[in-house]
Length: 268
Image (tube, rainbow, N blue to C red):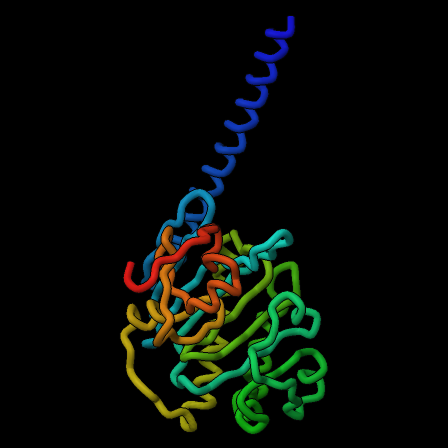
């Protein structure tokens, strides 16, 4: 009788595992299909990351390289985000904007102080930090503020995180935006923010250097968002580049779903 019960338990466990794998397989296929359709919409390419994540969409937008993917904070109470990263024409611009309660989960760039830009509602709703009050006021025009509010209203949460640094602008929205309409709306809103911000500030931006889309993406650290000119390491599994200090601080690869804890020095 015990053997019969043991066999039944094995069958039940095997059935549960099969159903879980089937569910993951269908979810992965749906995600990859969504990424492929959105990539075609923006004349880009989608890259499959496997059952446990790591998928990406890459395309160019008005000459700027764009990367869309999912990110995770890692750890026991991991929080997942949908992220768009796009080239920014000035390597020296640095700013960070997010709702106050978002601070404990994302953290602030080192060496920056909270500032007010003279817009009462926006100053109340967001923590703002950056190079200087003057540059932030020039950057955060009413149109740019409206784009950030638009991003904040998307999806089920009103959290949004915007950072510019190292020649990239990153926009994060809490949660995995899986449906095609939600993800498309997020991408379009983030691109609108980029367009408004750069059009308002082009005259005051000095183009430091011109870098091809592929090389620019290869040297951007996903943890701090800055270029990697030295102390470059690559994830052993997915080959994503990081600063060595950022890797150690984060505790492993920052690519969503990768989970690798080991890195290689230079090269892939």
